[in-house]
Amino acid sequence: MINYPSIFGSNQTLHKTLLAAVTLGMLAGCSNNQETSNASSEANDTATSDTTGEVLRIGTEGAYAPFNYTNADGSLGGFDIEIANALCADMEVTCEIIAQDWDGIIPGLKAGKYDAIVAAMSITPERAEQVSFTDPYFSNTLVFLAKEGSDFDPSNPDDIKSKSIAAQRSTISSQWLEQAYPEANMQLYDTLSNAFLDLGSGRVEAMISDKLPAIEWLSSASGSQYTLKGDEIDIDDNFAIAVRPGDPLQAKINDSLAAIKADGTYAAINEKYFSVPTPSETK
Image (tube, rainbow, N blue to C red; front, side, top):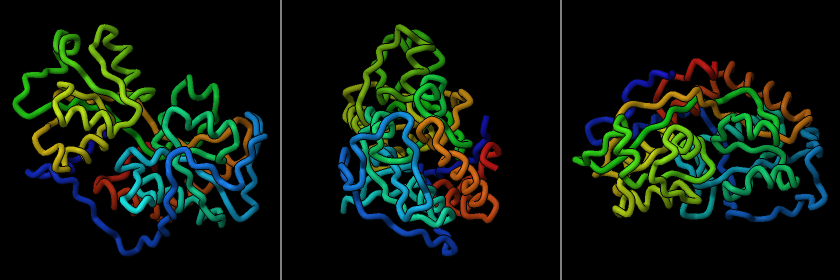
């Protein structure tokens, strides 16, 4: 389990230290499900990418802050976006980052819409049957949230069964809850933002989420009256980059991932977004 120090103060604000040494380019915005001019409609599961060209196409969700999100001007931002840019810089290629709804993100990779997925994707056996994963680049724990003063207690199975609990569909959070508590009153959402929206409006009583997106939301105006409930849930969850099976891009990304960790670029990006030490799994 990763032992993070406290990363929010009395106002539950997530401190993000900007490091002047990091100069990573911002990307032009992409809307969800957008098509790119060089995406091949004839690509298949065994297609491979070639990083000897000028462009590496990367898919992300754009709706999972602080890892990836869409800014008001339509541009993409977040930890994943900067990691992708750093990897492209090390490989001496240009990143073309494409936003894609979560449910279609693996099908989009298999269809050749992009060459890799950098989207806080957990390594799971089910996904590993469809894609190949790089070395992990982040480790994650799960948390429950509820309104301050709520009697919701996630250590009480009766509360899990009786309270309406929000979760994003097809994520580690929803899968863990479903497996650990098959009788849970779970409400599933296509995006994390919509799940937070219903929690904040009182349409559900609690929520389960990855820890860092939860803390990001707690620091916002919408989440100011909410808090974490119970202990963190360590499920040995690691995020990695997905590529098509057999693609030599996997080895190239692993080499560049090791390089940006060795030269301090990864630590600088991590500090900018999370202000916590680099997890031991990513060293």
